[in-house]
Image (cartoon, rainbow, N blue to C red; front, side, top):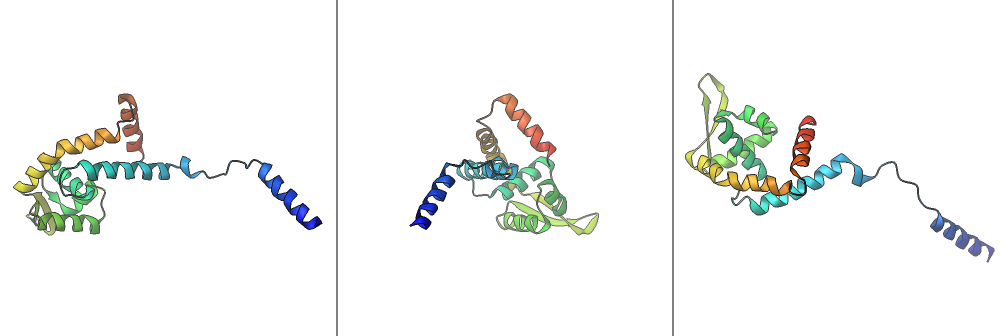
Length: 157
């Protein structure tokens, strides 16, 4: 009996002690917050882009539309994709007739990627949707907060 009473008393003591704040609170960590924001943005993108493209495929099309033809390696750097990822993206876009590749006239070892007419038309068609997606992602912020957030995140790249 004494053992049972002791266990009950210890249990009630544990219940009444308020836990101290842990050293690591997941909800306060930048990586966790960025992942949640990224997931929200990805859901908005999938819902609203209006075309059958992944975010990485859209990034490649948008960057080629912005810069014109460039090497596949350079395109990967400009879109923050590793060599294997950009190759897969370009292979899929080329299979769909949206990009084309060819040897660089100044360096035959380098592959140059460019938009086809269909790729440029698709990029032009999707650009307003992509702008609206960015606007919706940032909608909870006022104009000054949006500007500050973009500036701060740009410093972390």
